[in-house]
Each structure stands twice: as C-alpha cells, then as structure tokens.
Length: 109
Image (cartoon, rainbow, N blue to C red; front, side, top):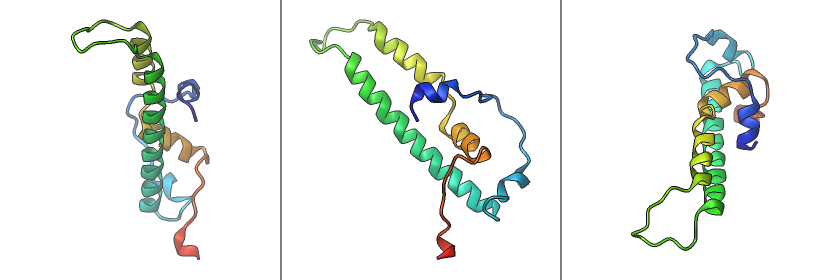
C-alpha cells in the first residue's frame, strides 16, 4: 500500500483504550496476534522508508555542493506528508482489526 492510500484511511491518531480480548479471536492466542501485528508493522515501516527514499531522491537537486544549503520546497512537502501518516503500529492494528492481514500458523503443519 502506498503512503497516499494510508493517508486516506480514517485512523484515529490518538491513543485509545482497546479491549484486548478481541485480538485473540483470529489466532486463538493473544500473543500470536501481537507477534503478527508486530511483524506487519515492521513490513509497513520498511515499505514506507523505501518509498520515502525513492521519492526524496527524485526531488533532490543534483548540482548541490557541500557548502550550499537551501530549502527545497518539494522535499519539505514530501517530509510533511510522511510525518502526518499514522504510525506503522497503528496501521498494522487497523489492518488486523479489519481482517486485511494474511497469516499462516506454522503450528498447523
């Protein structure tokens, strides 16, 4: 999922109390659910980091010397976009609650 798609999601950015009993329904174990959400959050963070680096290289000036420091409006706007996104843990939690994460239990083999 791209950063703009994540921005369109209606995710509350503030901390809320959650009922933890709802997280063991899919896996049968609360801790397995936490591990699944943690791994998904790591994946999301890596995807966003890679996307940000690709986009920042596109807007970076090529003829800059080490002594020149100036504002690049495109890079500032790009940074603001990524700062306003929900955190990867919030996105993983949202995906888990809405059954958007596929996982396979290795114990079922």
